[in-house]
Amino acid sequence: MNMQIHIPTPLRTYTKKNIVDARGATLTELFADLDRQFPGIRFRVINEQDEIREHLKIFVNQNNVADLRAPLQENDRVHIIAAISGG
Amino acid sequence: MAKANSGAVILLIGTRKGAFIVKSDTARRQWKISDSMMIGAVVNDMCQDHRGNRKTILMCARTGHLGPTIFRSTDGGKKWNEATKPPAFPKAPEGEKGISVHHNFFITPAHASEPGVWYVGTSPQGLFRSEDDGASWSPVSGFNDHPRFKEWWNPPDEGPPDGPTLHSIMIDPRDAKHMYLCLSGGGVFESRDKGNDWYPLNKGLVSDFLTDPTAEVGHDPHLMRMHPENPERLYQQNHCGVYRMDRARAEWVDIGNNLPAPYSDHSYPIVLHPRDPETVWIFPLDGSFPLGRVSPNGKPAAFVSRNAGKTWKKLAKGFPSAHAYFSVKRQAMDTDAHNPVGVYLGTTGGEIWASRDEGEAWSRVTTSLPEIYSVRAA
Image (tube, rainbow over all chains, first blue to last red; front, side, top):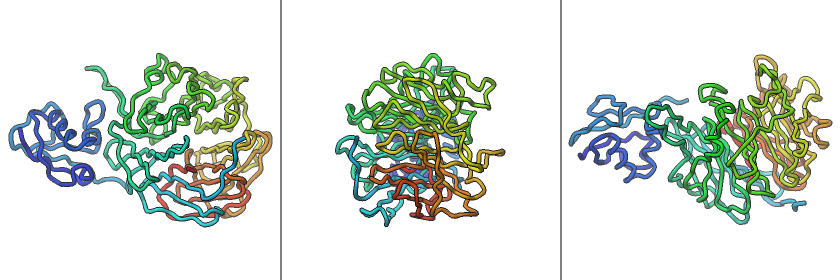
């Protein structure tokens, strides 16, 4: 499945763009493809226990999805959202 | 005895908002600060390889809400590349809850006989090793999966606000297999087989916050140092005092209970003379309730002992004499290898202070960096 991934500012050091294309039937596969294209990006979003890191969210067609096994459809729009809190 | 260095000194500075390199002139009087590196990243430690002619600098960084990583430079900090496989705990079996590295905390090159090998300590507490100059990292199972590990460690949801840490990884220069490390809230641990097995080394420590103050584990070393020219000599700044061990005796001796009031034996950093194992510096903080951890009464002072802790001398010339509430984190103080030895510290207020005469007089190098987490003389 091909889809567009919206990349938050903190991750654009990897992608150099705010929207990239990636493939995958699930979020797991999608992030594997993203990591293939942009090595290292997956670990910044998903930890070694396959959990989405705190303060990061993944939205699929504007629905917050926490399960990486979630299926994806062709042309789904995926947003990686990073909290803007800090200080 | 190693020969003293001369010439310019380079300080690697890790801060809450990025990293900096600060370089002196040959007289160690004038200092220049680099542009910021990794601005916005939490940089807990930054260390240059001191083995041979190697130039690699590794940086422990955590960028905003993104996961922790290690950055590498081989050109003195001009260009940085990220580790391809940062330190990460193994994935837990299905149905079990695993842990994930929150931040990399203390980084060090391995023994001189192992060029390209490094160790890092993390929070939650874990030990990791790289064999390719920091590009990829693997857990040291001998420690992280030790049968007694869960007796020793501070669980991730306990300990200090930033999380419990593994720090003070020390490699015996005489033997690549001989190592020490510290766990905050756990104690000192030793290995003689390159990390395959470990045992506590806490005899002599007295921690009044424990139900058994002399327990085998559970102590809180803030930082430990091994003297490079006499590796049998160890020093430790503990939550509950300053200690020295001569390894053959295998017992820590309290050397901090004779500091003059209002200065106490509560501190974080401890640094050593590069050639004289009898000389050590500390920077006492207010350890009274509720643990202010600032310079007592607003009067910053370092202290030096030149007789392994029997007596201490106050070193405050050049520091403000009032209303100066310095805090210095455990990794934010270091010495160079010149003669006389330069001593350097960085405060949580973003100031770097330098002494070119072993602490007799201090001058401020910079005033407005972010909160300083680490200072290393490269």
